[in-house]
Image (cartoon, rainbow, N blue to C red; front, side):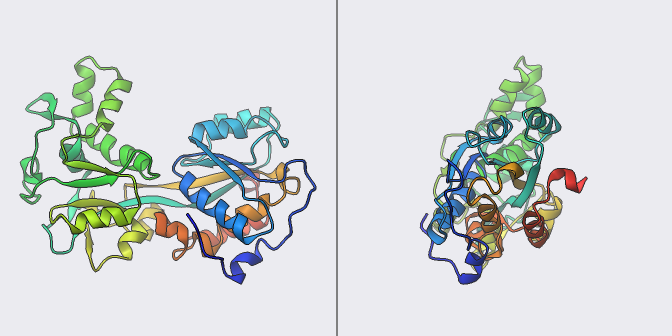
Length: 346
């Protein structure tokens, strides 16, 4: 994704020139596939707008990234681990055993998705995870048995929902928000409807039952969108009954076209997402090896650049891609400036 040159204020935090002080002169990052799109945007902008080389950003998942992060200190190990969850105690222990004792935790914002439909369409104003699962799950619990999903209308399984054709446009499997959609909506809905218990009682292992819960129907009622939210909006524009999954910022910029539904009785907002009250959300992080600051050129500057108002603020490019800006971003900026480690905050 190409970004315009950033303003002078955005560049002020990365004004230090790159040096040849280390054998490796670029920042190396790995981890969460959810954080990957945001980190890639930042890395490209960082390379374009500073004298430092563009950081190398790899995926692999939160656990894999933190495992690499905890391999030790030195230029042959990564500098930053992206994560869609907090680092676990056992990972902190593994890090310490390998000499990674000073870790800086950086919360970049929140992963929060909303369910919206045409302003003039059916009255889709309130959902639960059970509703979404019953609408698009590949297999559902019906009359006490697990069966292929044959529901055609929302009112088929919930009389409080409109008698409208099921047509959902959801994040594709490569999209950063697919994971939170699966974990916080499909899986919870599968549990709440009793489908998961019925699968396990029927002889499936818990792992197989979980996989079955995450499977979506392939008969056209659920459509994966691998592009950005503008593609989802176009699908909604063309389908009066369509319901799309959007990032909060995108929805807020298109309220003239879209109306949003509550989830489990909670209306999505920056406040309800940041507080955790809105259920389809989670905080996103990256972790920095403090020992690499001053050794790997541009490491601290990259972290500061990432969480600058211009990039991670509510009007920045990360919010446009789906990140919910952190209301406490200023405190995070101060902690990074001070190189405050996790131990310092205990």
